[in-house]
Length: 477
Image (tube, rainbow, N blue to C red; front, top):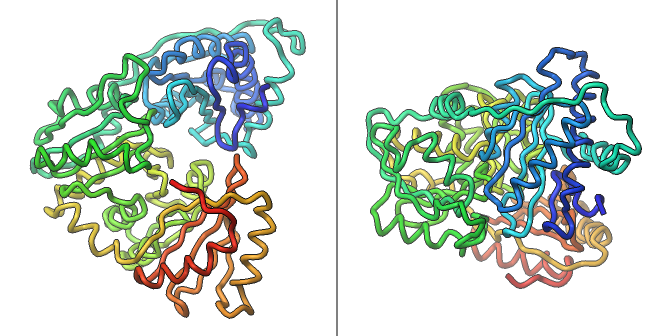
C-alpha cells in the first residue's frame, strides 16, 4: 500500500483509504531515519541535526496525520519543531533558520479536500524526490510497523515542541517588498487555502502592516476544509472570480494561490491571466539589475521570449527540467539569482534557492511600484509568440511515439528539427519553420504532454497539424 502514495516528488493520496494514520506514523519514522542519517553522513552531528521541522495545511485530516507523523519521527529518535498551520514555504525558511536536519509539510497542495500527503525537505531545504531520498524513505517506512517490529526502538525517543515562527518569517518575506512610497491596490484569492492564514500574518488584515498596500481578500476562510473552487490556479476557471474582482475594484494586480500557498498566478489590471513563463520573462530583468550577469533558471517548456529577455538583460539563461526538485537544484548549481516554472513556482537565491508564492508576489509588487508601469504594459512585449498551452494525448506506448516523433521531425527529416532530450523531447525548428515544441511523458498516466510555440497563430496551427497525429488521442479539456 505504501508504494501507491509515493510519487516522483512527494507523498500523496486520498485519506483515509489510500493514505492512513498508520502510514503517517511509518512515514514519520522513515523520514526521521533518512533525514538524521543524511545529516550524519554529511559529518554534521550538531544538536540541531536531531531536529526536524513539521508544518501542516488547513485540510481536516491534517491535524491527525501530523500527530501520527510526529509520533513516528520521535519514536525513531528525531526531535520535532512543530510550526502548526503554515504555508509550505515557511518550512523551507524554518529548516534554514534553525539549521536542522530537514522538514516535512503535511499537505496535498492543489488536490481536492479528500487528498492529503507530505512534502519532505532535507538540510538547507533541499528537495527530496524519488532519486534524492523518497525511495529510501519508502524503504525505511515499509520495514517498520507501529510496534517497531523491524527496527529496534531508540535508546532515547525524541521530543516535540511547538514554536511560533511568524515574526522572523514575516521579516524575511517583507525584505523582498519595496513599494518606493507608491500605493497599490491588489486582490488576493486564497483559494480557501493556506494563503488565508499566511497573508494576514505577514501583511496584516487587508494589508494594514504595509504602508501603501491595500489588499482585497477573496476566499480567505480556510477553517472548513472546503474549497469554493479547486485550489489550482493553473486552471483558468479557478481564476475567473479573481479576474472579475480585479476589474470590479479597479485593482492594480491580482494573485491566486494554490492550497499550500507556495505557488501563485498573477492577473493584470485588465483582468487577464499572465502566463507564468511571461511573468518569469518580466521579472528576470528586475533581478538582474540586482545581480548583473547572473544566471536565471527557467522551465524548458517556457516561451522563447524568456531566454531572449534574460540575454537582453545581460543574464545567463539556464534551462531547467520540469519539477521543483530539479529547478531548485539547477538554481543552486548555477548560483543563479532567480528562477521561474510554468507551474507557478518561483525560486529565489536569497530564499535559500527555494520557491515562495509570497516572495514572488512581493517581488512583482516592488517591480510594479518602482517601474511605474501597469502589469499589462510589462507583459505585452514579452508575450510576442503564439502558444498552444499544454495539450495531453492518450498513448499506451509513449516511448514508441517519442521515438517516432524524432524520426519524423528530427534531423534528416523534411522538418529537420534540432533535438534536445533534457526532459522528454524538445524539437526546435524555430529558425527554419518558425516553431518548436516539447513532448514529455506523464509520471503517473499513459499520457504525452505537448507544449508548442510559434512565431504567429497561423504557423502554430500548421505545426500542430504536423505534430498531433504522431502523439495519440487528444484529451478533451
